[in-house]
Amino acid sequence: MNDEEILDLYWTRQEKAIYETDKKYGKYCNTISFNILQNNEEAKECVNDTYLKAWNNIPPKRPNVLKIYLGRITRNLAINQYEKRKAKKRDYTLEVALEELNECVSSKNNVEEVVDYNELVNVLNTFLSELSENKRKIFLERYWYLYSIKEISSNNKISESNVKVILMRLRKELKDYLKEGGIL
Image (tube, rainbow, N blue to C red):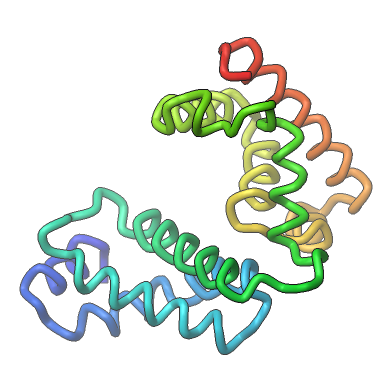
């Protein structure tokens, strides 16, 4: 079933919409939530919450790209859940990835105080669009999907040390890009 047909099911309030969404995007959403939460039960619960939120928001909203819409909901719910049960340990992939990005966007003030959120999103989208496909994939796997270095290495068939070097260079490029754009 294609996305438009699934959205039509939501629009006409047919419960089959949830089944079809899970069938097509369940694994995708579960990967996102598990990478953040590192717990199968919490990840499944988060995915179920994603479907509930989609059910409650469609209609009146009709997302342009269902996969991205569901991914964003899942990611936000998982991060919220993570924050609620914030671990005593600091070795989770989420914390490590966010600390890495903090090198690029940290300043004396909070980034949200320095720039309008939408401006930052536009600058990041432009930065990503200028990267090669491989670099963009590695960047997104780390900072959007929150894959571990080992998973990125395996997905891209490159060594873990190569992944680390690529990410380090991308963070430096991002920091320089943000400085050039007057954001930092």
